[in-house]
Amino acid sequence: MVKTETITLLVDEGILDPVGDNVERWRFSVGSLRRVKTAVHLQRDLGVNLAGAALALDLLDRIAELERL
Image 1 (cartoon, rainbow, N blue to C red):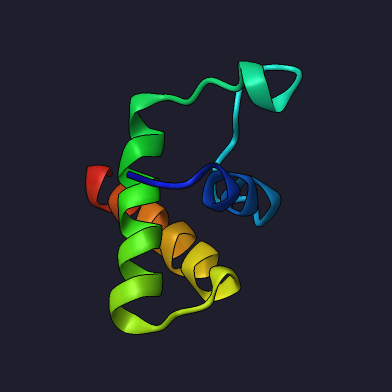
Image 2 (cartoon, one colour):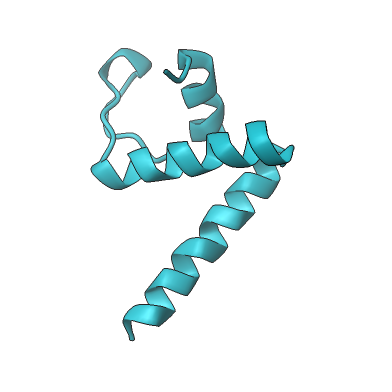
């Protein structure tokens, strides 16, 4: 389970992009679940800070995009 505070930090860092006008109404895509899982793994298991996790996720997304070409 991921704490609300963690989700808020992920949104603030740009890792997640919620739909909704306030925290209580935020909704996330299925792809967001993968991003949360990866970001939490990078932080907990590898000691990467949020900025590093955001960068890693952006790079992973870019790699996946290039592989689809």
